[in-house]
Length: 237
Image 1 (spheres, rainbow, N blue to C red):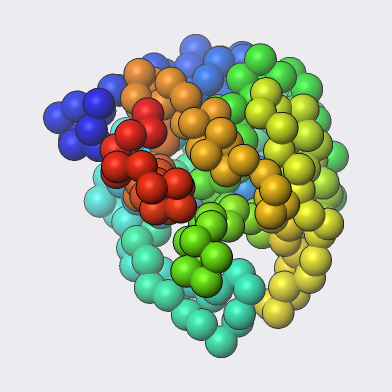
Image 2 (image 1 turned 135 degrees about the vertical axis):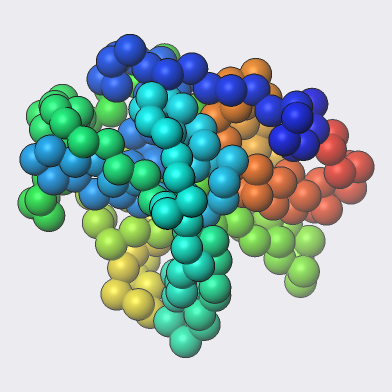
């Protein structure tokens, strides 16, 4: 299935955002990676309309043009580089925020979080996909013809949790140690000997059927892997 709008599946609305489904796993992965919680509001951000629509559908919310803007974003590894990107922001009001903080250990009102994602062990790929799209980066290394995948965040505890999720993933995914970024945050990447093609197939498995993905981020990972492996663009599903 292509990334054309007409071919995209529509994610299902969650009857309970704390129930374990691919949609809720993806939703809370995105919230943890690029979102905020207050006592009565969940805020989650996305960089393209596909992901914004998917998040809204899972939350049972209606999107409007008001949640779209063009934002400045510093490079995670070099604060002197600024990119201008689409930014979509979705807010869900009510009890899910307080419940998610208690059940999943997500930070509430800026307080430290514990990040307890054990409940989503059966939906690990969708959870990691949300985290990857929210706070991950993908690059093609021209010098070595390889793909770099890294996760960047201000909270070391979240990165430690992501490393644990990857350590227990179906494909073997060794990671490097955490390092500091020039902007004051932290990051780690998949190790040089990690099978990035296997990671790409695993993390986006079933995304065509569920519609739970960012079209831009999926395409970038797909094209980078295919350049590195010599496969035709579109070979990864």
